[in-house]
Amino acid sequence: MTVLNVLHRYVAPFLMGVCMAATTVMPDMASMVTSLTAAGVYGFFSLPAGGRMIARLTDAVA
Image (tube, rainbow, N blue to C red; front, side, top):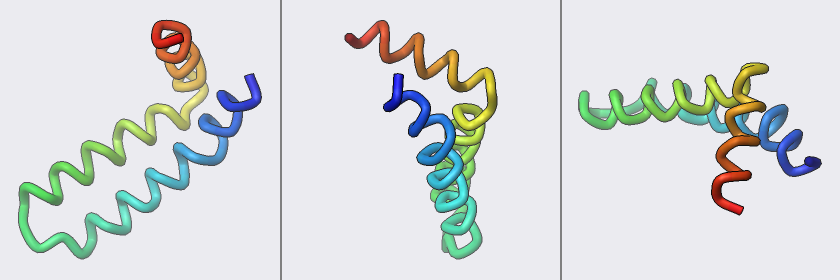
């Protein structure tokens, strides 16, 4: 459960910010869309509903 909280509260928002910052310097449109998509996924995981989604994914994998 501790790993879930760290992923939800710290790692997902950080990675979303990294992807958003990287989007500002992307030279082509394909890379920009890929980075924005990754930022959207990490942004969803950082929301309260994202914690439940991460728990479902980790239960399915384990």
